Amino acid sequence: MSQVTLYSVAYTLSDDLLRAVGSILPAGPRGLVTSGTAVTALALLVFGAILLAASMLNTILLIWWERKLLGRFMDRRGAMHVGYAGLLQNFADGLKLFRKNTFQPREADSLGFYFGPTAYLATSLMIFGILPISSGWNAGSLPLTLLLALTIFSFAPLFIFVSAWSSNNKYSLMGGMRSAAQMIAYEVPLLLAVVAVVIVAGSFDLTTIVYEQQNYWFWGPLVVALIVFVAGMLAEMERIPFDLPEAEAELVEGWNTEYGGMLFAFFMLADYLRALVGSILVVLLFLGGWTLPTWVPGSLTSFPLAGIVWFMVKTYLVFGLFVWVRAALPRVRTDQLLRVGWNRMIPLALLSVFLAAVLVEVRCLPVFGCVPSAGV
Amino acid sequence: MTEEGTATEENPVLYVVRPMATAAKQFAKSLVRPSTVIYPFERLEDPAFREEVAVASGKPIGVGAIWDNYRGVHALNIATCISCNLCAFSCPDLCIEMVTVPGGDPKHPKKCPEIDYGKCSYCGFCSDACPEGCLTMTTRYELATAKRSEMVYSPEKLYEVFRTKLPMNPIRLERPENEDQILLDPPLCIGCNACARDCPTACITMLDVAKPEAKAGEKLPKRIWKEPVVNDSDCVRCGTCISVCPKECLFWGKRP
Image (cartoon, rainbow over all chains, first blue to last red; front, side, top):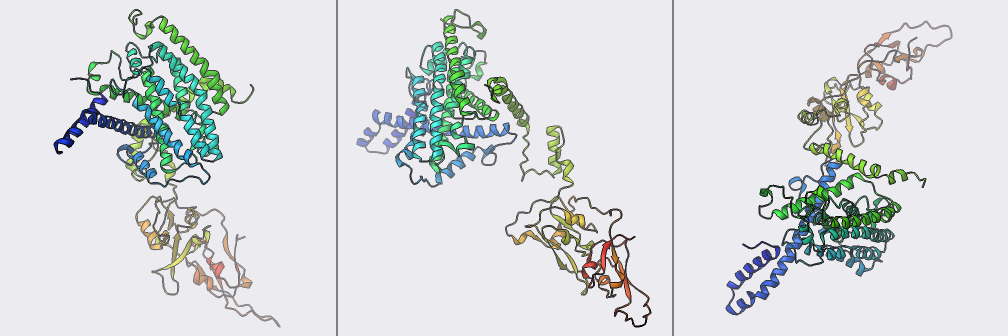
């Protein structure tokens, strides 16, 4: 039996569906419907639908996970009444937002006002097409997957700024400017930390990066890069303590002040989609992706879809780390934010690049459990 | 840089590690049982719930000591109420109205407090003032109603609360030492019996006084030759006699 991949699942589904439809049609249309082209086209659609549904479902679960964790950090329980342990609370909230009226300020620029959130959500969703969840569970293995993912990830300040500017509100504009400044300040150390990983793994392909971590996960030797990457991700995701663009004590609600109803839900979803992407990238780059160390008993890694299960467990734990940071740390000031970004993060990132080069030179570090000659 | 706060900002241990450790400690503590009481399903006054919390957290729930002093809905024992009006007098929110209840004679209708919880501030002055200890505050705290008129609790409704035997506030029955008493200014009294008639505890009796001999050219005042005598151990200091006296001859004071 060949390996089950996301595309094979989608192809089988659409093939069965079109055969069932074709069996009740006369011969002429039947040939048209069950042709290879039609099956492939439908398979692509099903593939996209599965990705969309899975990412949206995970996003909503992530919000639930954050509410529950944050509740425990604050000595309370979080959502607990709608559904088991409050699992359906966010679906109810989403339905409420979906039913609300969409409005815009009188002087707002309609094009930017509606284009901003839509493009923000759409680009955030695009990343999921290329992130491998397990071996074979991605749209395609591009040689530069990581670069493409980070490129799409860094579109966001543009759309945030567009929607903030077209809201015609001073708080929105200030939030948008802060957002752009912050994201650009933290893009550099983030990419440098990624460069350290790429140097060690020798590839921009995320699947290759994961398989390069079979001997040891990268978080150990590249712990400096991990710290820089997590801090940069926190700033990119605009989460506490780097949520200056949304600083509700000074800027009302930041760049989404004027948004309500479904457009606000777009922003909210996209924020958590980006948080999910950030957690997934941390898992892929530093925590071995869907693989487990070799000393783990085989029964834990051999059940069907074990890769996806372990990948999601790791992702939610990494997001738990983000929630922990949110629960513990206060918001930084703008000057602190930029000073930490330019004065601390970039030297640390450069240091991590240097360490990665050293690591490649000695092939591996004995402390992390591999023999020096095995890595060649 | 000499700014305040720079030191902590430069020190990642103070600025990052310590708060994260504190948060982790809190997380571990509330993982078993957060402090939140899931109110409609768990109630602080429920002994089973308090026992459960005490077992889970290893120590009794914090409100145990103050719970007995809780000031909630009043309980009224209609049988012992003497219609003295002191609760209504002492109410700072004017939420107590004395309404007639069955049980009095036609001449002296029995009046008991009716409390409007829309106005009540739960200060507890009324139950402190109540001389008979028949108006007390209980631990009942759920008062949500669909209509505003349902917020007004008639004496019968308060009696129902009394019959539930909820824990009640300690009643202040001891009198302070050297309390003010009802005193009489004899020359002003006309012996009209109003005070004795309206006294809720019937502690005032009208005793005869000797009619003085009129001197030459002097006219005796036109009055009944009786004067009120207050049985001080029975008096509840409600002041009804002072307020009904037509000549203002009764007053508060200390007996020399």
